[in-house]
Amino acid sequence: MTFVVIAHYRALPGAEDQVAGSLGRMTAPSRAEPGNLAYNVCRSPADATVFAIYEEYVDEAAFIAHTSSDHFARWLRAEVLPRLQERHRHDLVPLARDEPAGEVPAKGAAPIGR
Image (tube, rainbow, N blue to C red):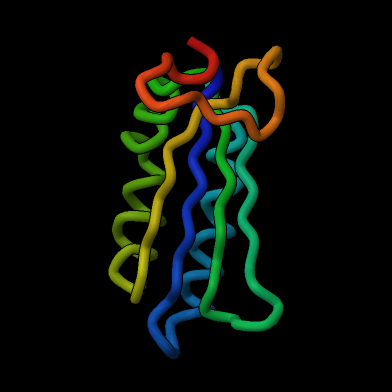
């Protein structure tokens, strides 16, 4: 089952262009990782300090490998994170393909896709 990460960032005022540049430098090496299926960085057209990143990996181990990479240390840890006002990360797995969209299991029921 693939592993998806959606990250939402708000840059500190005045740091938005530095954050954009560093996130841009993450894209090519992240997409070149053997376990990466998608790596897309987006920026709000209404607020230049707001960014979202959609990442998809073959599994959670591939994501963990990504967080251990040289480019992650150089561009994300050293350049992006210190320049953020807010950071939210969602670790997700896809719903099973045979589940109806939007269906939520009853309280106490097995999670969807299990």
